[in-house]
Length: 207
Image (cartoon, rainbow, N blue to C red; front, side, top):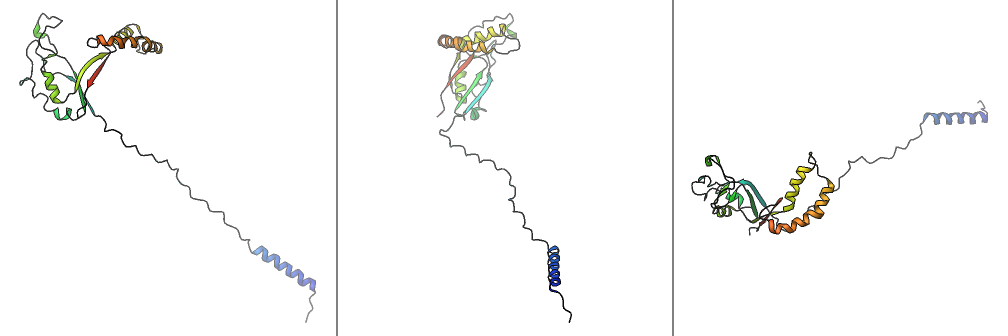
């Protein structure tokens, strides 16, 4: 039996340990898991508050002309009694209905402008009794007044002397609001039936 020196045995054991360490890879720890990306969320829109009143519905029509009696009788066959029957269900449904009358409601009278040949003249003049037909159709306006009487004249002056491009100067607006409009409010009491830049409609809500 051969005797192996002890130092050689220790050296061989150390060599085997080193080879085993090179052959086996150290265990690696996996990277921490990340949460999946989520799309940005938009804040929820708060619901609309409940209405505090039932609301108000309006209807508006324009350029109404039911006929004229100048220079001759050009009125509907039944004198306009059923002229608005087809639109009455629509006009009477809203709370307030108003319209733009193309002419005047007036009985008789002579036009300011005189024509040599009345056959080629026309006047937007409807008999005053037609006001009842408008009321039956659903119109609610009780009174129509002009407002801002000086504003009408100021508009004419500005069109003649202002910028041709139509641009409005801020200084002119401030002067109008400070000086012209307060005086115009006072004059409206006397001129509301004659002249004005705007219209003021007075109506009563249908019950």
